[in-house]
Amino acid sequence: MLQSELKYAAKKRVTRRDRFLVEIEAVTPWLSLTNVIAPHYPSDSGPGCPPVGLERILRMYVAQQCFGLSDEATEDALYDSQTIRRFVGIDLNREAASDATSRLKFRHLLEAHQLNESIFNTINAHLAEKGLLLREDTIVDATLIAAPSSTENKEGKRDAEMHQSKKGNQWHFGMKAHIGVDVQSGLVHALVGTAANVHDVTQAQALLHGDETDVFGDAGYQGVEKREENLELPVTWHVAMRPSKCKALDKSTVGELMEKLEHAKASIRAKVEHPFHVVKNLFMHRKARYKGLAKNTAQLFALFGFANLVLARRWLYIADGQVAS
Image (tube, one colour):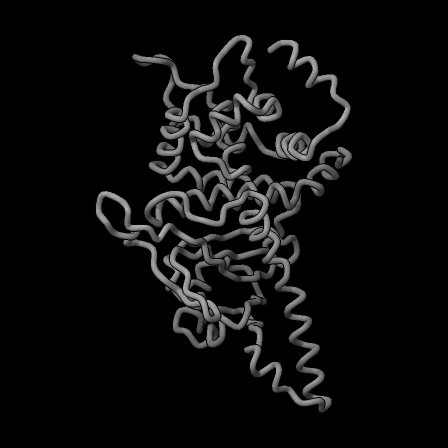
């Protein structure tokens, strides 16, 4: 084992996983996150086996979310990947990697005390201190997260809190992640998890921080300004025209101006796709891992918090006087 560690340290090529974890380690506010969790984390003075160190279990949790791993797969990765072991801080010459049960208990602790949302808010507070999360105007959008539709379980039923939704000509079973994104930075400042059949427009107000003057949304938010909860809001809604109406625009001067306006709104809304890309493609979170909306929404808070760090990492390098790799 020692020989393999020395060979790893002497290798010349830096892999994408190496580079990614180095960047995540550099930009994550570890002290702030551990301070948020510490009051709820068990001490090692009680009976039984002492718990895993808080920063170490937090590092395992970050690696687990960023690589889309289950509790068991994370344990395997700790034995298989020297890169992940270095990130977590485990030396197999002196100790064994913690088992899946420790990560299960840690996840349950985060859920019980709503600490995933606290992680999300702590990361955003850190980004705001660095001048990145400006909280000016907002883009609102939602994405579908699939859930297992199998009934091969004890109850013989699908998850009762998940529902079907039709997108285009295809039906999807699962939930929705609704997010509010800062127009300037492209970082997520608000998140709501619902069943897939909940219409986007009903969650628009919950995605605002209150200081916006302009809000941008796709055609799914048509009529948002007429809803009772939005009538008194001092904001201007910039909602995309429905595709059928956009295609029907004539070639007159007015029609061409309307088309240019739609292109301008679309270019602003494009930023909302970046955090979705990180969560669904980089973190590989395309299917709900747990049963029930509460557990899956809790995980989404952590995922989008870490996605903000990924999106902001190069700015954070500059802010801290470092050079991005």
